[in-house]
Length: 169
Image 1 (cartoon, rainbow, N blue to C red):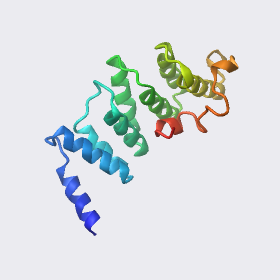
Image 2: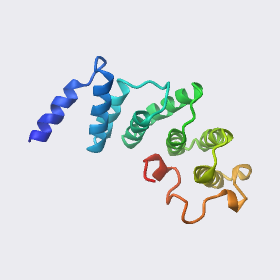
Image 3: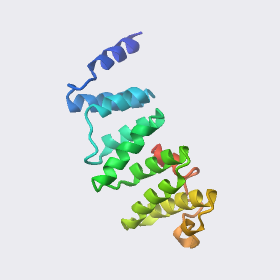
Image 4: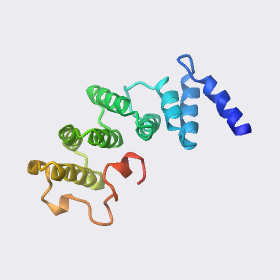
């Protein structure tokens, strides 16, 4: 009963005039409680697509979990139009695009990230994600054929895009 009262009070603190620190703290609190829609709304009131930090990533994970797909796609597109390509944000965007069978767009977005020169295990996982999408839609030009450029069995996320989009690493 106390928790419900506290959450009701917290919900009443959200709004356009909420100080950024309060909105972010509320967003993290709601996300930790699995209240993703509330978390997303709390973050949205205080975050703009002009940078990437842990708060932005938490906003996108929350919106993704709340199936607020139009917001995720638009916010990520705004980040990219501002010259910001963050691996986690791109993976969330690509995963969301896949939900709507926009595989070609997902391949393009993942390719933009690879073109930035990322390397290591992250690049391998992105190549695998892109290759699996390409395999599904028979786009052989985007399938990675160099096994050394793909993650080994101990490096691959069990469900490319999904697990990494949720932050399960």
